[in-house]
Length: 323
Image (cartoon, rainbow, N blue to C red; front, top):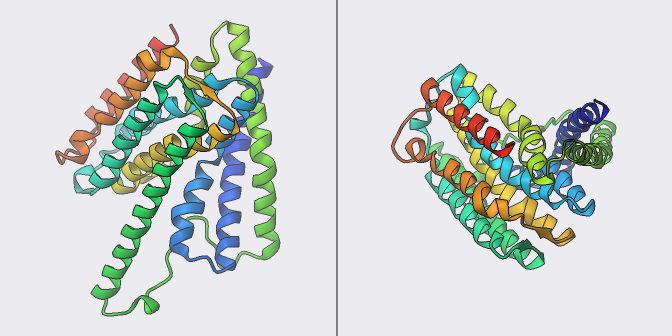
């Protein structure tokens, strides 16, 4: 029972430490004069993925590559089937009004690139270089789109960029005192490795105790746990009728998982690919991604019926994985 409780404690520490790191880093960056747009596209995005990144790095250092890879592949599958499915049970998400085709296409491209690299049998520094190259392109493209969007807004308001209101950034507080910024940074920098160590170490103990592989633990327990922030964000977005936030959150998170987390972790150590990933799990991840086509391209809303279907698919997937 103790390893389960320590796993839960590690997960809770990860979630709070990740949030603290984002708040501290955002406010420090803005104080140092870093443009809000760049902060939104980089620091916030990386900060919210910090728990998954630390878990993957710790897993590789502890010679548990199945947890590292399972964390990413399982999280991406959970993000679509579970993170979109459960909120849809609470309220219809009007995704027909969203414009996410470009980022969705990038997510599919990232997924295919990831699968192709996985067939090399290992994610090493060369794979990491390719994945981080894809991440750099995605960030550059997002930065360009964001600048064009702001410029168009400034023109529509008959004002120049200099007169435009400051970009709102998640976690930003212009009145936050310096000591509080430092405290958030300290909590994040100390809490993330501590939480990752507790989660990975005890998840490995659970796997050994029940005779199951690190891969299965990564695909289930760790993946679901590290997807909880996305689930909470998406539930709130669905209840507030902000379908674009919900869908964009999932697509963005999936791209970062594939390109940034495995890309960076590959430089820490080699990640051997379990053959089961090549036979089943990677294709489930890609298939789950393709299930978004009706919502992205055909103007469909994610109704409760879709919510039931997506959640049921995820339940079936977990059942198969645990067999």
